Image (cartoon, rainbow, N blue to C red; front, side, top):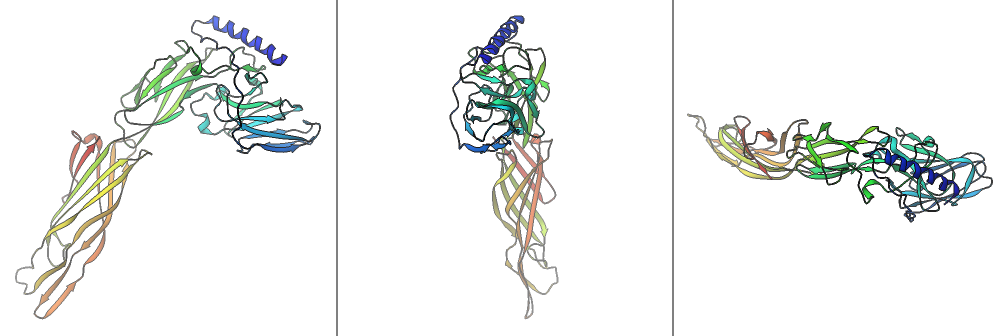
Length: 443
C-alpha cells in the first residue's frame, strides 16, 4: 500500500471507530477488505496519445478518457481493458487502465456512461467512482472531485494515476425492479455500500463490503419505514410490505387481484450516518394471472341472413380463451367457432313462386381478436373479427328462376365486462337482444 493510502486508511478507521461508538443504532463498521482483482471480460481498446492530448473510448462505449494538453510528456499507448467488477457497490463492469501506475502532469478525466436502468433503486447522491490500489483495497474518490450529470447520463472524475476503475452505488434497494404475478412475493434489501470512515470530502474513502455481504447485518433502526406507493406497510389494493429476517430486508407481496399491468413503487426510508433520511425506491410491475373462457351466443328469430326474400331463425356460437402475456396485457389465445344453425322461413302468403336455399348462411367465423384493458379499472373489452356469409338461394316462378348468390361479408362482435362483477368466477351478460355471453374465470 502506498504511504498516501496508508495514511488515509488510518484516518478513515479512526473516524469510523469514533462514529460507530457515537450512536448505539449505528451499524457496526465493517473491516476494510482486500478484494481480488477483476479478470478480463472482453477486448482491450488501445490508442496512442501524445503531449497534445486526446481521447480514448472503451470498446463498449461506456468509458471515455480525456487527456488534456501536457498530461503526457511523450506519445504513450493507452489501454482500456474491461474486467469483472469486484468493487463493493459496483453495478456495471470495471476497467483496467494501462499502463498501470502511469501518472500524469495534468489530470485525465474519466467519464462513465450510465443509463436510467443503472440508477434504479439507488440514491443518486451516493453514486460515485472508485479505484482499486496495488494492495487490492477499493477506494471511492474524494466527493469534491465527482461530477454527476445524470440528465446527460454520465458521471466523471479527474485523476492523475491509472489503476482499476469502476462507478459505484453507495445506497441501493435491490432488486431495483421486478415483475410479479398477482399474489407473488419478493424479498427486497436496502443495501449499504457507502464509504466508511471520515466525512472529509477532499479525501478518498475506503470501501468495505456492502451490508448484504457482511457477516453481521445492520442493527435495527437503519430502515425507518417500508411503504408501497407511499402507504406505510402497503395495502390490499397495492400490495403489502412486511419485515424480513434482517432489519434491512422486507417482503413485498403483490395484490391478490390485478388486471393487465399495475406498477407500484416500493420504498424504504433509510437513515444515513449523518442522520439524514433518504428514500430508496424499487419499481415493481404486477401482472394479472387470470385466464378467462368466454362463450358468445347469437340468436336472431327474424334474420334475413339466409336470403333477403324470407326471414329465417339464425343461431350461432363462438368460444374464446383470453390469457395474460409476459407484458401483463391480455391475448386471445384460442377461438372455437360453431357452425351456424338456421330455420328457413317461408314466402309471404299468396306468393305463387317457390324458394330454395342453395348455400347455408354463416353468421360469424371469428379468425382473430383483441383485448383492451381499461386503465385504472378491472374492465376488459374483448373484440372478435372474422367473416360471415349471406346465404344463397333460388326463387322460381313458372319457368323463370332468379338466383340470389351467396355473399361473403366481414363480421365482428365484442363484449365488455368487469372482473369484479364475476360471482363465484362466472358471469352471464346479455349485451343486446341478439348476443348473450358467459364469462368463466380459470385460476
